[in-house]
Length: 281
Image 1 (cartoon, rainbow, N blue to C red):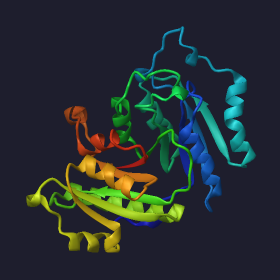
Image 2 (cartoon, rainbow, N blue to C red; image 1 turned 180 degrees about the vertical axis):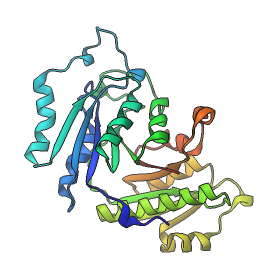
Image 3 (cartoon, helix red, strand yellow; image 1 turned 90 degrees about the vertical axis):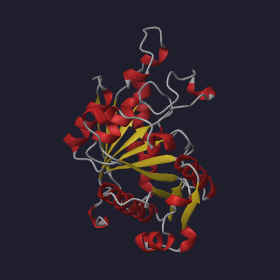
Image 4 (spheres, rainbow, N blue to C red; image 1 turned 45 degrees about the horizontal axis):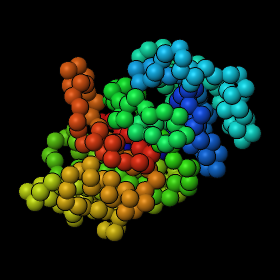
């Protein structure tokens, strides 16, 4: 299992969508001021144009300096060190990856408004599912990507990690190690409770519960093994334990495989309302 001591929370990239009035990624970064370790924040201000109405008559395309100043003011009031850049490059996800590498960040905080039809959103969104650009970001990022939903900020009390242990493929075993290690690290960072969920589709694929407990080194009450489609099991367990963050994993893909959609992690994204921390194997 990876060494948690190698994980850092010192330098984070926070993606800002200037067309939105609600900035959940920035709100989560501001909440970090309450932690013992306060990171340096680099703000990446840019629009995912592949998922946005860029017609000139869209009022969300215009942002005044006083609005930007108001956005940055809470960082200054909390004495959080930060830098900022404005980027209009396309593709959006590649520009974020360039910024992440340039600033050597520990992870990336990204707002995810998919499926938001609330009155505060101002319009029904043109994308209702997790977009291709966000998957490209997850699979090519040099560090974990933390997707933040526009939910009220609250204390990080419960972390849920989703694994699949009924496999003998080494790449998945390594991914499971990363998911558990990252989940425990997040739980330690936020002083939160930690749970693990493992779904199985039928009796032929039932995971070894004892092995899973030994693998996670956790109390049986915190290890959830359930029958059902993984995405449904993950979502229902997240509600059951009242999770604030769900840790999921996906394998990095190149070439033609990068276009393959429909894996468990993607389906889980569309079922979950919690913030999602992604780990790539």
